[in-house]
Length: 116
Image (cartoon, rainbow, N blue to C red; front, top):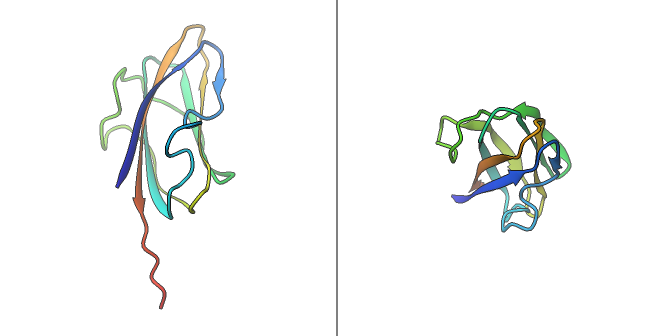
């Protein structure tokens, strides 16, 4: 399993189109099954997952635990798939008048293809 964990500042009343931009796992390294965990420093963040241009989850409220995500408590979405090279886009919106921190953990497990 491959894991990427990150805390990202989301400025007041803005949208970060992809918190994974420029990261090692911005694109799927292989055929993977994934899980996304998320928390925020306070109420007011929403997150949305798109993979390869497909909407996996609509904008979803992020819980305000003010810590890195705990597995399995802070799961946002699980059991989604990405083909090798597909873009993994996590869009985060801060709906408040103050800067907030978005914490996320991306888990990816390579899926074996059995032909038969």
